Length: 472
Image (cartoon, rainbow, N blue to C red; front, side, top):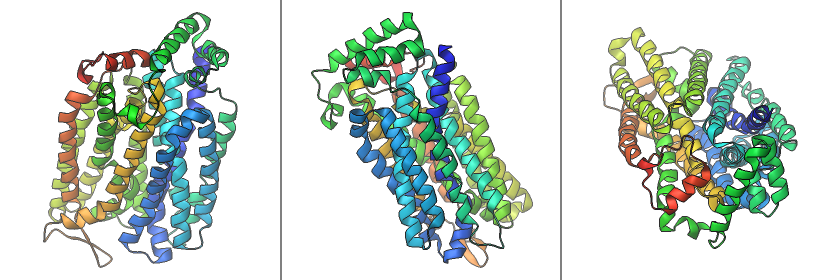
């Protein structure tokens, strides 16, 4: 019975991940239509896309401490309200300025949910199930991305340039599911106990772990809170020497999660497939749906293996595959004029391979690991820092993609679409490949193996000055 309760709680909370995926992915199929509807160039498209990411930065920046004060559940409920309003506003937007503001507002909910949801799931999960349950957040992100592509495909109509509006409206449905579902979920037991609400915390622990395990978990949590009482919960606490490795891990893994370039595919895949030779926006969206399916299937693989094989094995397997596929993708686009029709299909296969390796590794592992490595006293703040940085990095990657494509295009390899010089993305893919190689080297030293290790033991390990790669 208790296993059922844990999974129900995790699935409802992870709907925040579905919204995260839907509202970041839906822009992909909407771009070709609102670009023509409003008469925008690629620079303005980058601005619209990046507006949601700037909102996510604001959400992550201001909600870390609030989550520690008000609780994980309240903050997730607030994000559901913002998701609902933001979806309606985006679809209604009568001008490009209104659309930018609406996406900025919606981005706040994306930023909030990106740290509050995995944090909530991590704190409510038993150690032996924590990896797979927190990875469910990434799984729901991929379901959301796929749902957004399917929504784009359902409403796409090359004879109606305003067809992008219902693509945004449909986001109201999962937002209401999260709002209603979370209203019936319990608060994090670790947060309740940290706020002196011990009996409520013990009651939640009993529901999710059983009465026998509850006492041991309660004592462990109390002991770690007592150790942390003398420490102030603030940014200065994160700067203490014993937490240096946790901070490096949080910053580093989110940097590499974004700078291997995944969101250039998530946001701009129809544009990339148009560059590869697909004919028309609807055909390119069909190819993007393939990206969503691959992303979902291989995230399921990751969820299955993360508590069986462990974090490090998945990390190195995935990053190696990312490096090789990006290298080959660059070669494919460099010789696109010689490869012809075969080049079009090679490019889509390599994009699928790239997404698959990302989905089994650093995609879900980034969110999982930042929810594990920080101690209770600053877990909300630490997770907020990781989420804030991921959106900063995401914004940089998204806002610079077309600029990098143009800057790294070798003369004579330019791709033209409707008379417009789009450049060639080969150099951009090679740039992201170099980042993937750096991620492999960094990961050897800093990616910890947290499989089956309780959050309290991880904190104790940092206090003893342990090195990340030796954590078991």
